[in-house]
Image (tube, rainbow, N blue to C red; front, side, top):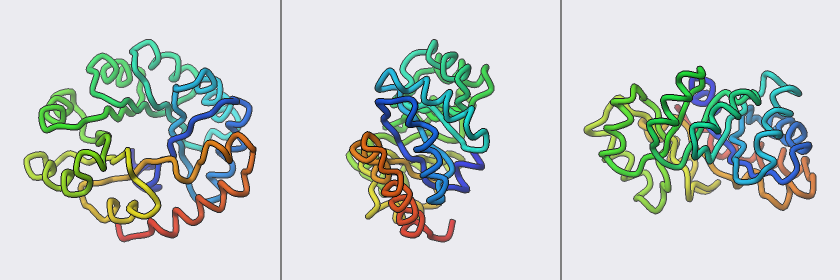
Length: 207
């Protein structure tokens, strides 16, 4: 989590070709973003995680859209170092912790934040952030839960990322604006590198 907090930006990536994984990771890293959440929305997700992990062990690769406990084992075996899910599933959380992975379950309510605390977590994904009230909602939740830190996702853009990052309760933001699926499919790594550079510059606020 300390590495994710230092980077501050977690790209959410949908891949159709697992072989594109290492080139994508290299483009992000060259642009100043040394991590990525590779979603399991396509069959390419798990093999892409394996290829990225093998090509660059220093790149922090995680798995997103993890919906079942068995997927935790699959992504852990592929080399993922953190797990992200859209909701709070205790079985996924417990399995990830048992496998030594960081885990960021999605929360949308105070009740879910409280359940996450009882599971031993102090970092969660706030999803879908903009629909739920954005920065104001996170600040409201941080009142009764001062020890919880949030990763807003869903509606986070290049235009509002810095605003989120200026919130003390936010440790990083996630989104896909720097990894457009069309550029990934076209193999336009120069474009992704430049978008990453622009993102890092735009989000450079005191942390």
